[in-house]
Amino acid sequence: MNKPQSLLSNWLADLPASIVVALVALPLCLGIALASGAPLFSGLIAGIVGGIVVGLVSRSPLSVSGPAAGLTVIVLDAIQSLPSYQVFLAAVVIAGIIQIVFSVSRAGLLSEFVPSSVITGMLAAIGLILILKQVPYAVGYEKDFEGSENFLNADGGNTLTTFWAGLTESLTPGAAIIGISCTAFLFLWDKIKPKKGPLKLLPGPLVVVVMGVVGNALFAVFRPEWALGPKHLVQVPIADGFDGFVGLFTFPDFSAIGTGILWTTALTLAIVASLESLLSVKAVDEIDPRRRTTNKNWELLAQGSGNIVSGLIGGLPVTSVIVRSSANVMAGAESKASAVMHGVWLLLSVALIPVILNLIPLSALAAVLIATGYKLTNPALFIERYRQGLTQFIPFVVTIGAILFTDLLIGILVGLTVGFAFVIARNFRPAITFAVDGEDCLLRARRNLYFIHKYELQQALNKVPDNSILVIDLSSTSYVDLDNIDVINAFIKSAAFRKIDVHVRGDVAERTAPKINAPSYGVRFA
Image 1 (tube, one colour):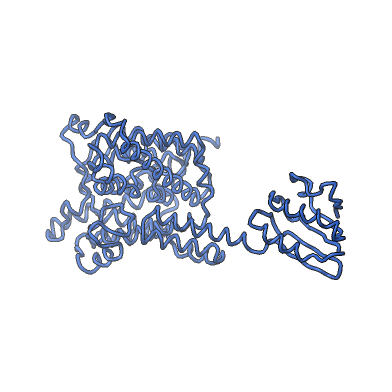
Image 2: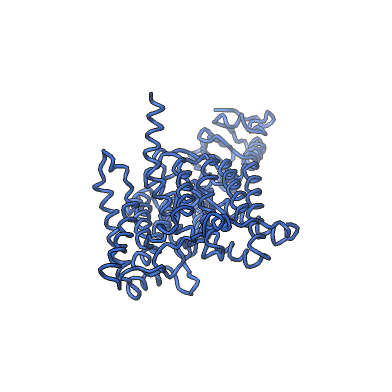
């Protein structure tokens, strides 16, 4: 009896979540394609493939894949450098194959070495970026491309100048009324949403989309000067019949497969897409209410499969995307069925009802992303990290700042550098204590000894006087590396000539190779 109930529970949670993710994904797919210099439909293809293909292959319960803003610069440069868009598609297919090779070589394990402070910093930074980037859209100022994560804009401005200009210079009354009312509704809906009955399944983002469409229709009737035109609405390509829809798909050209630029592009796409996917999946695991862990090597296989399919039918490269994944988690999804269904909704929508989609105001969708961003960067997260100490708080804040003022990948690399610096600093703290009382000396290792502790160990041993009794206490260690063993053995060898009686504590001494207690050294164990 439990299993059917569990499945029913998942579907009831995944269905509304998939609608939310599809609404979030739609403008992002179009905006990223536009910024990449690719056909608009290529972004939708990547979104559909990321949902259906990657969703089916992936073992991540909550991650959602699609075209990524982090790849726009690489994709734009590649499209401009390669002979044609069809040749670029060949590079996407090859990148997918390389990702599968990464999967087989178990490269996914590298993501496990990313500190949690960097991961939570990435999530908080994405939340802030969503708020800063979407507020202008909410008031009708669409200066940057939808889905941008970069601080600098193509027009020479940046996130902060665009944010301020949206609030002070180019406010569009109709968009602002829709954006502000939809945002207020979403925050209110979280508090008043029924816990029982059919309304508990009603997604707030779907309600605000309807509010936006109806509101704009009312403006057209009663206040035509406030009505939003195509510039402020979703713009899905509209095909002329079935043949026209099929004609929107493009196929790769492998004629340049022998050229170095094609392979360089493919390798670059594979590395960057894999890195972004691994970090995104790790971040999603962090915010999964059930704290499930995704097999990262299998995720590379899923992403590679998605890129092969996307490239074969004219789509942009796909990665696991933190914005869509976060929206999926916040919408209450329980399994990967949500990601798959979101891909199905995208496919059905662009194929059957593109005219209706083009009635949706961007300001209504901006409200959805603003609400998602607030949940990712909730002030309570900052307080929690601060209480965990500066070794957690500083990498967390540095990661946020670096991502905000550069882009996602550069910011993460800066955060990793700072995080690893704290790890190294912790290991450089004194690992050895030395005490002497008359003829009795105690040298104690407080934790495992690595090569960086060799100098500290040597300095402590140099303090041991002749004609004394030395206890080397290794009972708190589970590992002592060869460099430190050599230092201890060298000291023991000289101890006999200095009349120093050496005693070693800790079974690590008997488990190391070479042994610390070599018979010729005459060492006794305390």
